[in-house]
Length: 73
Image (cartoon, rainbow, N blue to C red):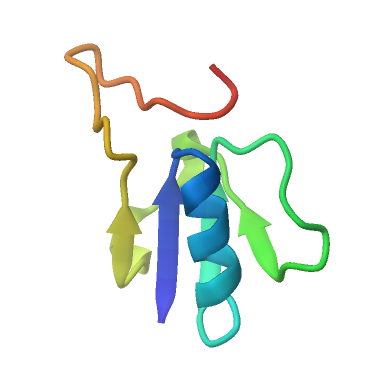
């Protein structure tokens, strides 16, 4: 299964680590992750959302300006 994380906080990093043991995990918006994880960073501008089985957004969601809260902001 391909899982995409769009932003989030430290809790999402734990979820990514756990899920990456059995699934392909992709992410956008994290500065640092455990270097032992098999994750692939993507850029929001180049994403084809139809390529993912699951897309997880941060709890705060998306602002009216279509901005996603990430660790980078």
